[in-house]
Length: 99
Image (tube, rainbow, N blue to C red):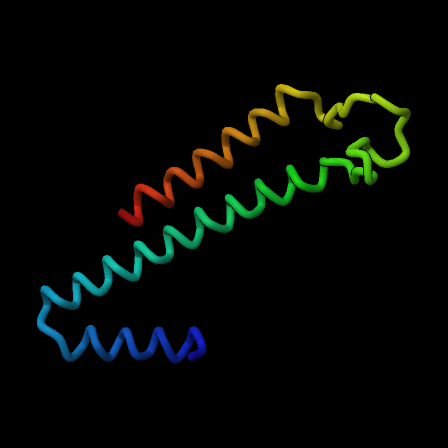
């Protein structure tokens, strides 16, 4: 079902239901939008981390590097690890909201 049709159906349910149920439906819809926004941020955080990881060859070394060459993130390790913590925060938030 398209998003517009789903929203129209939600509006109809809200109009036909008693005020308490309509309020509950609105809270549920708002919660879904909140989770979707956090999810989008988590996916973006993961994508940015993934783009920084080098491709590896069959022996696990970064492609085009010397043997035993260490990986160094473009922005440095502190910024790279900070984004991992941010991703963990997003996932924890989604987990907490879904419980």
